[in-house]
Image (tube, rainbow, N blue to C red; front, side, top):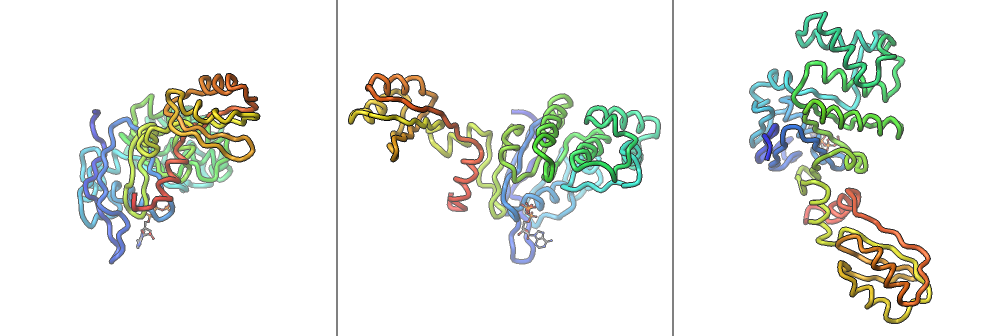
Length: 315
Ligand SMILES: Nc1ncnc2c1ncn2[C@@H]1O[C@H](COP(=O)(O)OP(=O)(O)OP(=O)(O)O)[C@@H](O)[C@H]1O
């Protein structure tokens, strides 16, 4: 186990009678990329606000970089960079000027501020746009500038609220790669809130699923899939013609097969604990049947997410 950078214990936030965050207990290790996932209103932003010292918990304990943000919000602000879903820049000033300004607000002397700003602009792929006014930046460029902006004070951790919102697919891919490499190269912890399951799956070491203020599951993707799907991690889909009566039991007898389901139109779905597609193909051919198509489907975060959401709080 590494060193925790975030520790939440029984963290609760109520607005009047309404509980926005309900007894949340979670530990995030230094250097991790952690995804906070959940539908609108699940409590992600409220949790982030409490971690930044911008909302006061009703109950429970929150510690970020060893500090209680409720008591020492300024100290936390120095250690944690926060990128909201839409960053505000001075539109009539260049990206470089905006970064230098941010650096100086963080008490970094002008010369060093300029050096850091130039280095970061290079790092986030905006060196060519350094002197362009931010009002003319695209959404993707703004988010990259936002990343540079939160990194300028050299934080231990960054919190990104829906960082890919409104960016085209190519831009999303680049931004996510950038976040991942920044985290890996500099050892920065990343906390990322998102609705976008596929994206989170690409770069997060672990994810937490939030529903109605509660953290209902937490773990890495393989662990979550194992817990949710028990041992059935892969489904082989096959289209088979002229199968014999005995094919079903033959397939069921292949080591690693957990379930054989025959659909209409010659389609079969075979739930497996590992990839046994080659063995299944052989069994089908040996049966004398015609194998027209065979594909494998691994469970991803989407299935996990939907399965939890279908089950709601009862799970
Ligand atoms: N200041 C407030 N007063 C009253 N209720 C609030 C306040 N802030 C948030 N809430 C409520 O708390 C719940 C959690 O909101 P929160 O913004 O944390 O959710 P979220 O998971 O971040 O959602 P989204 O993805 O839409 O940002 C919502 O039902 C919201 O209406």
